[in-house]
Image (tube, rainbow, N blue to C red):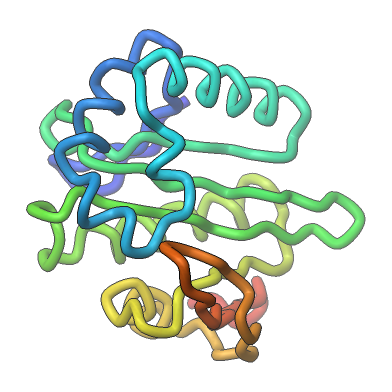
Length: 178
């Protein structure tokens, strides 16, 4: 499955054949990513990623997860996905990360916009939400730019690098999406 975002940016579902490239980008950005993402240290080999991608494929089959690689000019630069999709409530959480050198040019904002459009228009979701570490301003700016509402703070929700972090929750309803 593929969602075209901009001329040079596309979102594509990953296969186990992508594991080496995904691992390479994670490994190159390991120090940066592990500031905010608890899974980075556990992602220590390409074969680990093959297992993770197999899990994403299973989630796609079950309708619980829809994970895409972000590609710029056909080069992998990050991930974005709809997770924890709940059918009775028609809700899902967006998670995302981008290689550090690809940040600051609106790529993630455009990718989140495209995924929200897809979630509301193709999957008939009613609510989409995003968790961000309270100190991760770059991540928090994405939902703000797109009109998500600050719904609350989950205190000490994430334990990472020996410390607890608050997570900020942003959400948007289909009826409020532009």
